[in-house]
Amino acid sequence: MATPIRYRIRQSPLGRRLPHGLARFYRAYHYGLNGHLARRVKVARYLRATDEPRLQLGSGPNLLEGWLNSDVVHGEIFVNVTRRLPVGDARFAYVYSEHMIEHIDEGAGIRLIAEIHRALRPGGVFRVTTPDLQKVISIYEDRNPVIPLDQYLAFLNETLPNEPHPRAAHMLNTYMRAWGHRFVYDEADLRAKLADAGFTDIVRVKEGESERALLQGLESHEPSWSNPAEAMCLEAVKQR
Image (cartoon, rainbow, N blue to C red; front, side, top):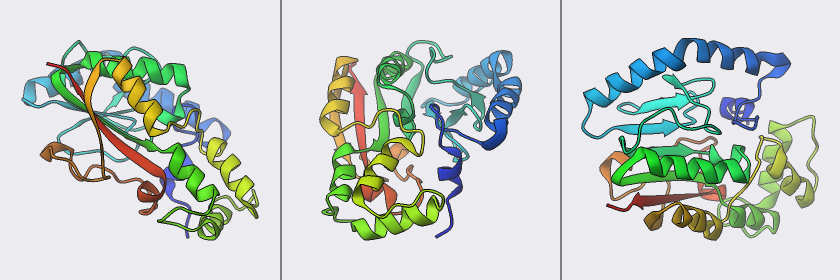
């Protein structure tokens, strides 16, 4: 199995780790083109062009049509999610992130959830897909219904050939550090943090599925088994 490009680039506290200082260069280059004034113009233009504005945070190269895609390396605008989001209050109908929030520490994650709540309109929806600690533990215990432990170890040995993974302990330690993970949530913890920020109607949904048409078919994390095996997807509503 070839190493997916998303695994090679999603490895810093903000989800990106490129070798030999390239991460800093690409972030600076992206910021130069898409930060401050350019970003302000793009955000304003986007908001004028749609009645249902949608913001993707941590897009990576996965640019969603009809969305305002943001990232520190890719995306249409530069956004550092550990800082105040560069958008006004109650601007967006939807905010979406996939495999991003686990790359910042717990405190930054709490602040980000509050910022997303601020940026959403009343009745707006935040959809978040992120690793599920309980699913990760089930792989370690070899009781995951999607992927057996030996297959997961084989994937790690091919993806990270310089770090042998002969046993379950190696798998669990690698998961918590190798891709820049800073805090991995379980469902109860993430639900509590969403509720503390003021979100209501918090529901768990299957990846790619939603009762809301604009939130269907969004997840694209590679390899294709990774979300069913490792992740959870929650939708939460900002109270009207």
